[in-house]
View (cartoon, rainbow, N blue to C red):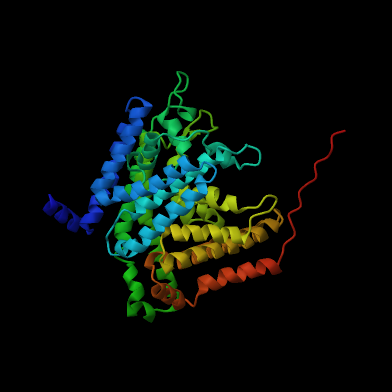
Length: 465
């Protein structure tokens, strides 16, 4: 069996560990399909927990489940001991354990060399454990003054252990996400809320949406396999890269970022297919006539939205969507003081949490600080655009194109750090294009304080006599 795995792995150009992960990852689709037909909520929770643990064992080995167990224990024990403070306790302990695993395994180096371990799955699990504890703590609060997400997701009772483990490991959904809420998992498992089946409105079929996600996954993998030999990351450490001119180096940075994104598009398309076919990805009906089913809970990326974004502010809504939503609900919104508007500090704090969640490599830290600058500069251009009269369509179009070009430039410059990880390689790559992707957003950020456009005039509504 091991010989066959080695031959298969060499045939497609990956390590045995990665091949084993890919097979288990693909298996989440049929495993999730079966979950839909398991009778009774209790058995579905049990099936979700066991199937997730088995897939973890087959993919990463026995130690993976021990890591997951530690993180899950932090969350559940904190809910048992102190409902009021269980959110912050779980935040500190689960995140602390994840950081410890990042330091011990230094997974980024292994990922660059074609290896893999359970740290990526632990990252997803950590977010689920924290959100569950915070929502249980929010159940003590009155609805007045809560954000919409808090009202929707808060838990009025503590989940049972089997419900909790089923949620955390559900059919291998912790491998690559998407992250979803405990309340949604419980309602789906128990056929409540939008999953209530009635004679006049049965639950929608997930098969067409699943097929679409699988076709998208195939296209993404095909493009990635085609592009990656032409734009390898190793080129950034080769002398030939530094012999090129400025524009050629800048173009290569764009193409290397563009190439790497297709790998993530593939992974998220597979996870989307698994969540959709389980039924958990269903998020309600559209307002069209006739109503169409929506599968937004499974969606983790909008490919065209990322590649054609006309503003960096749109990127968190298009890329790693569910993690971005988690960061907004459990970091960004909770740092906003009552009666105050959010500012750059809330944005920077959120991006810092995201960086630490990914790992302690300098490249991650630099990338997410860069992304905060990217978004701040884009907001300035957007404010200028909104201040222009709608009648001046030409100038508004010019500002839209400037914001598009700005986002394209700074995003693909910044993501080099996310890919090469080391401080030396990141700084060398940035220096090779004269730090243009750092200087430009800082310039726009400063100009935002100098050139303050007037607020758009809103027509006054006449009082009815």
